[in-house]
Amino acid sequence: MSTSEALATDAELTAQHGQHGAWRGPASFQREMALAKIAKSDGADAALIAASMVAIWQDINAALSPIIGQQGVAALFARSVLLTSAEYPWLMHAYQANPTTPDLALLQVVLQQQSRESAVAGGGALLHTYYALLDSLMGAALAERLLRSVGANP
Image (cartoon, rainbow, N blue to C red; front, side, top):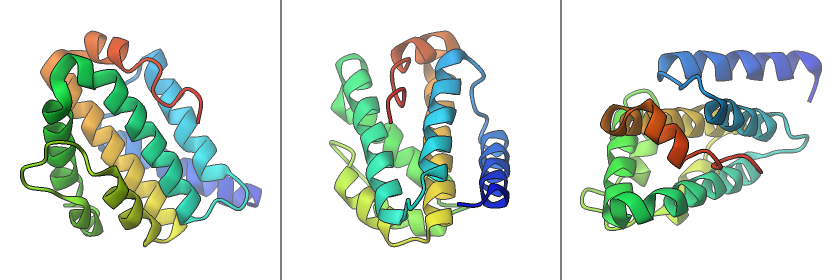
């Protein structure tokens, strides 16, 4: 990836973070850095980006399931997909009306079908929408605490 492509990707990520109300705490910074690493990886195609995004979602699931349950995690995921699909309509293919668990295999397939840039932008927007919903339900401090480790080791 050239320097100009990396800068363009940084600008896209910054624009997405701003549009979706990204958190500003230390854990948020870790997640943003994880997404930036995914986006800047040499040779990172949509399949690698999809796998990296699914790994982050697995971390979210592991962190939140003991607190809000599998169905709570799945309901927030479904709502996030629905909201984010207004900007990225292709995400609706990952939507489930009454989920009991997030279908991460389906999300991975949907992300793999996109261009590299679309997978990064749409996947990042989905994460930020989820974080914003969680923040609105629990408050920033608790949400940050629960998700502290998510995305720390992409």
